[in-house]
Image (cartoon, rainbow, N blue to C red; front, side, top):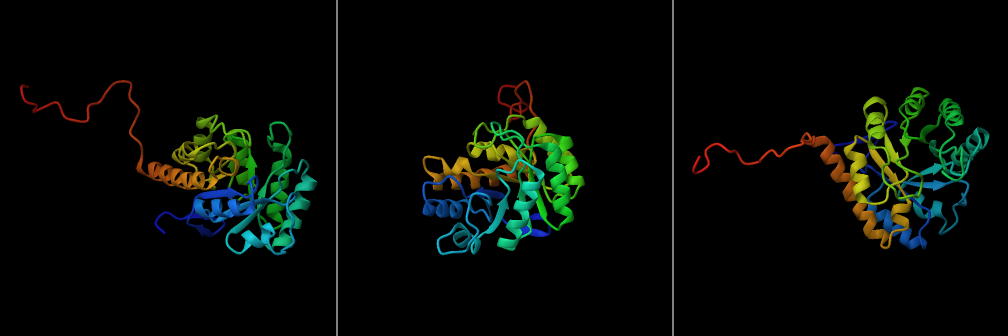
Length: 256
């Protein structure tokens, strides 16, 4: 593993997280996850059965990928903490994507409650990966209370608008001392590549694959986008210039 991605001491090969909701059927979901190369699959605890019966999501995904439960749908600190505790008891994992929504229409986080819930869950032994807004101070606060990563939105959940404020994401990546996982708003592979070029450690997406015309092919495209963006980030892009800079030298040309 030449470029390991490490969260909470766990080294991951893939820098792509993928969701499990919104697919036309379970087989399409499984094929898309496989095509993405992702190792971590998110699942909403409030919207799935936690029983490991045959063909349940837990049964289908749990043995092949690391399941990352999330608290989607929670709008109070109490609900988020209780949902997290239920997930840990049922699934045997302390890893958690913490979502605490303040507005149903935009699905923007309730920042005040989010930081409080994250702090309580960290004290309780959870590996907390909070979904948050694209605000540097919020991300710094979440890192300060012990979150293993921060997951700022690129644009509203499921919107496909891409990264609305690249400058904010780049600033978060440069200032926050934990991994930054771009979460929400990805529409296509170029969005995923841009997130990585801005300095993100990974990308989490769901709707962009699940609702694509060809989810399996889009999953492969997202994997390639993340890989390409990471390579570009490590390589260092050339500076932007207002005028041309010929790639061939002018000296020594015939007739000069």
